[in-house]
Amino acid sequence: MIRTHEYRYNKDNQNGNILWFILITIALFGALATMISRNSSSVNQSGNIEKARIAAAALLRHSKSIEHAVQKMILNGISESDLDFTAISANHDNPNCSTGKCEVFNVAGGGITYKSPAKIINNPSYNGNWLVSSQNLVYQQGCDALSSSCTELLLLAADIPKSVCLQVNAILKITNPNNDAPQQQEILDDEEFAGIYSSTVNSKFIGGTDIANESPELNGKSAGCLFEFGSGQGKYYFYHVILAR
Image (cartoon, rainbow, N blue to C red; front, top):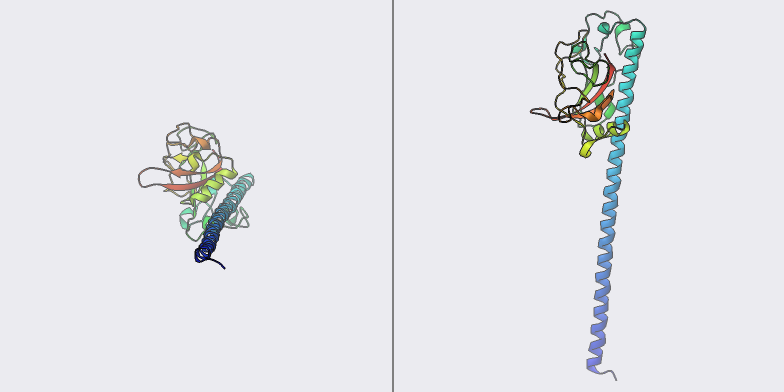
């Protein structure tokens, strides 16, 4: 005969074991859920980086094709003052150009199809466009004097996503200090090139030697991405030298 106190002991012991197994199962499920969540987050992060890298590579390819088109046109006898980028915007319409031969985005001229950076990046939150500037200098690209005769013909895209900006530099092996783009105090983009080089010259060189203000990581780089800091600025800029002077 099983005594009452022995029966109660065995029953309590069995209940304790069951409770213990339930707690272990809950803990295992919790650990598994945490691991799945971390793996999912890691996969999402890797996917976002890869997406930004693809966009950055596409941006670099298209800007390089614009540079090649300009170089080809100049070799074919088109003056740089006749270069027409009117497909970008009406403000780029060059009055010196009267035929398709001097239009960069024309089969008779540069021979390339116009694509906005917004279309290339394919990011719904970005709607930026190109701008061709003649107000900025890139250090060690052409001459390095603070003169309108030394400013580069520069292809710019403002406000591009930071993730794309960082991947542009990663592809070009440009250092992103502190996981951010090189810092530049100022980029001038208030005059579109339409055949006449601007008399306004940015005194801050892209890639210059002023560590605090001139993005030295971009020294000698014909293309790259930077962060423009300062009052009312705070933009990520992609740039590409399409004609060094």
